[in-house]
Amino acid sequence: MPLQAPFSSLKAWLIDMDGVLYHGKRPLPAATEFINALQDEGIPFLFLTNNATRTPAEYVQRLGEMGISVNADAIFTSALATARYVKEKYPPPRRAIIIGGNGIRLAMQEAGYELVQRAEEADLVISAMDTDATYARMAEATLAIRAGAPWIQTNPDPTFPSERGIVPGAGSIQAFLEAATEQKPVVIGKPETGIFRQALDILGAAPEDTVMLGDRLETDILGGHRAGLKTICVLTGIASRAQAEAYHPRPDWIIDDLRALVEDK
Ligand SMILES: [Mg+2]
Image 1: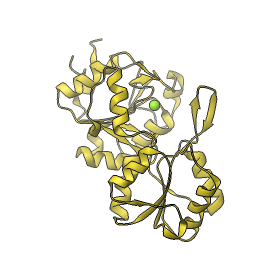
Image 2 (image 1 turned 45 degrees about the vertical axis):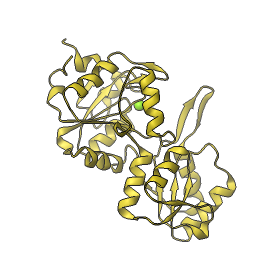
Image 3 (image 1 turned 90 degrees about the vertical axis):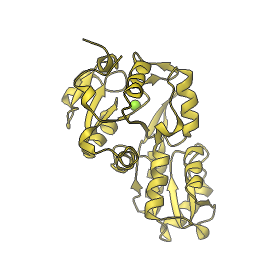
Image 4 (image 1 turned 180 degrees about the vertical axis):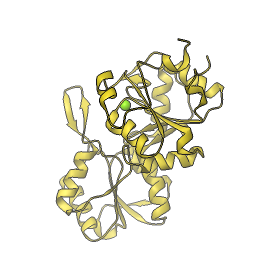
């Protein structure tokens, strides 16, 4: 199935995953058909996620279980975007304190950074969602930032939903460190433009030829707009039609689900 007009004229795609391609472990309608259409037509795309805890390999496996088959290099997390940004701005060899899980730890190691524990050893501080954050580790990060180490935050999401309700996310770690250091980090993930700039660079795409497809207005749509991209809000996730229509900046397109991209209407 080919992509439908007007979407067939877009030259590159950035695609959010949760609420767009799947809900939990359930693929959403036409998710596989849509990705197949991009692959068949050789249209470059990246899956763009603020979640810095998982590695690309973990996403490839998860998507594969839902019938969506992509290579690891199609996955672009805020962890990878952060490592790429840091590598440009503060090239290795340097030593970093990381508050964060596997995703960011691996990304920074692969980019050539040594991970350290103590403030006195650290040239950089990187913060992210961390289910094992302790006071002692937060104190080391605080001391390093207060001593002048550049501080980069993977993504700003304050909370995320768990099976038992809303729990602290990466942005809560950020808020803790902001209170402790009286400073603010450089933030890379959506809706900041850092992750979009890195993604466009990887795809070799111009913003005006590229579209951001997502379900969240205040990250996917706002971030895409700020980065100069076209935007599509899909209503299978967080945003309702009423919210999407009332939002500024208004998405360029609002679609009920991914069938609108691949099926004749
Ligand atoms: Mg989403």
